[in-house]
Amino acid sequence: MHQLMYQLTRQLTHKLMHKRRWLFMLQLAFTLLICAFLIVPVILSMLAGLTVNYLVGIESGLTLRWVVEVWDGYRETIFASIGLSLACLAITLVLGVPAAYALARRQNRFTRAIEELLVMPVAVPGLATALALIVTYGTAGGFRTSWSFILVGHVLFTLPFMVRAVLAVLMAIDLKTLEEGAASLGASFGQRFRDIVLPNCRSGILAGSLMVVTLSMGEFNMTWLLHTPFTKTLPVGLADAYASLRLEVGSAYTLIFFVMIMPLLLALQFFATPRSKKFSVKDVS
Amino acid sequence: MQSENRRLLVLMLPAGVFFAAFFLLPMGRLFFIGGSGTLGWAAYAAIVTDRLYFGSLLSTLAVATATTLVTLVISGIAGVFLQRHRFPGNAVLVAMLTLPLAFPGVVIGFMVIMLAGRQGLIGTVTEAISGERLVFAYSMAGLFMGYVYFSIPRTILTVMAATEKLDPKLEEAARSLGASPWQVVRDVILPGLKPAFISSGAICFATAVGAFGTAFTLATRINVLPMVIYTEFTLSANIAMAAALSFVLGAITWVVLALARSAAGSTVAAAG
Image (cartoon, rainbow over all chains, first blue to last red; front, side, top):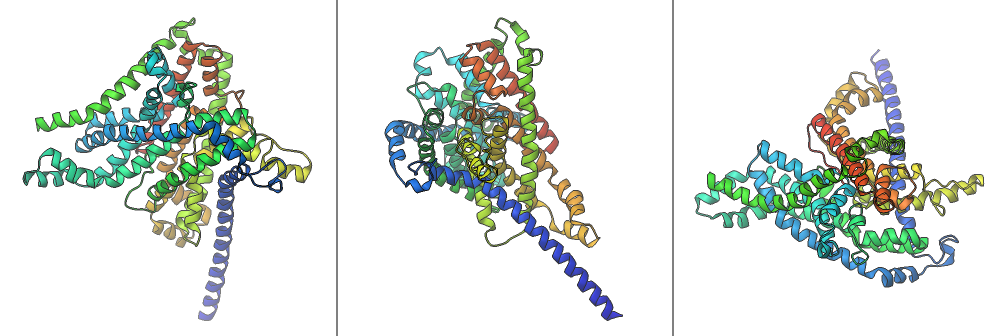
C-alpha cells in the first residue's frame, strides 16, 4: 500500500515538474522574443551607420564615411546638447534639492499639492508646454532666439525627476531626528544642510542627475517647437537627418547618439533596477 | 517653529517662482488664446463637434488603448517571469529589456523604420518567404509598434518591483491547495499586481496620447492629435486652434494620470 502511494506521488510530482518545466520554457521563449524586438533594431541601426550600402548589406563593406559626414555637418548639435543638458542639471540641482528638502520636512496637504503641481509638466504633453511658452514669451525677441528658451523647457520637464529622486531618499531617513541632534549640538542651519542633509541624499542626487542629463539630451517633443535654425539640439538634428538624408547617415547619427547616451543609461539601470534594494527611481521614471 | 516655516518657504521659493513664471502663467495664457480665434470659446468644443478633429481624437485614443493593453500583457508576462525565476543570464535579459528606457521618441521612430520600414528587417524576411515585402512603419500600425517599444522598459520595471513585494508563499499556498498555474495567475498574482498595472498602464496611455516625436519621424500624415496640433500651428498658422487642442490634450493626459493615482493609491508620472 505504502509502496503504491509512493509510486503515485512520484508520478504526480514528475508530471507536475514536467508541466512546470514546459511553462518555464514557454515564458523564457516569450521573454527572449521581446528582448529581440527591443535590441535587434538597435544593433541593425548601429550596423547600418557603418555599412557602405545598407541595401546591399554588410558585404558592401564597413566604413566610417557616414560617421564623418555627420560629424562635419551636425557637430554643433552634439556640443549644444551636451552643454544644454549640463546647464539643465545645474539649474535643476539649485532649484530641486532645496525644494525636495522643504517638501520632505513638511508633509501636509499643502506640500503634497505642490508636489502634484511640480509633476504637471511631465504629465502634460511637451507639445502643449512648448506652445504655451511660445504664446507667452515668443515675442520677447532676444529670449526666443537664445538657448535659454530651450533650457527653460528642459528644466520644466526634468525638475520633477530631480525633486522626486531626492525626496524619495530623504523620506527614507529620519531627517528630523538627525537634524535636531545636530542642532542641539549647536550646528547652524547651513552646517546641518551641508553636513547632514546633502551627504544623506547623495544617492538621490546622483540618480536624479543621471535622469536629468539623459532626458535633457533626448528631449524632442518640446524642443522641436522651441528651437530656431540657430539653436538646434541633437534630437532636432536627428529628426532632420531622418527626414532628408539617406538611411546610412541617419543611422550613423543615431550611432553617435547611442554612444553618448549608453553610459548614462547603463548607470541609470544600476540605480533603477528593482533589485537594488537601497534606492529605486521606478516611481519617477 | 515660525522661523523654520519661513526658511522652508524660502527654500521652496526659487522652484516655485520658476514654475509659476514658465508653466502656470503660460498655461493660463494658452487657455485664453485657445478662445481667441475665429471660433471663440467654441474652439474648445471643436474637438468633438468638428468631424476631422473628432476623428483624430478617436484614432489617438484607440492607438493609446491598444498600446496600453498590449504593453501590459507583454510586460506582465516577462516581468513576473524574470522576477520569479533566477537563472544564469537573467540580469542580462533585464538589462536588455530596460535599455531603451530613455530613448527619445524620434529615435524610437527610427527603430520602427529599421524593423518595418522600406529597407527594414521585416520587409526583407517576408520578401524572402513570400516574395512580398511587408512594410508598415509609416502608418498607424508602425506608430502602435513604436509606442509599445517605448512603453515596455518602464512598465517592466514597475511590474518587477511590484512582483518583488508579492509574497511567494501565497502562490505556494494556492498551489498546494490544488490551484492550476492559470488559477494562481488569475487569483493571486494579478490581484497583487493590480496597483502596478493601473499606474503603469496610465503612464503608457498618457504618453501614447501626447507623444509627438515617433509620429513625426514615421510620417506627418498619421492622423493623431499631436500631429494635427503641429500642422495647425505650423502650416495653417491657426494658433488659437492649436492652443485649444493642445490644452484639451493636456487635460486628457492629466485627468487619466490623476484618476490612476487615486485608483492605485500611489504616485504616477508620465515621461517622454
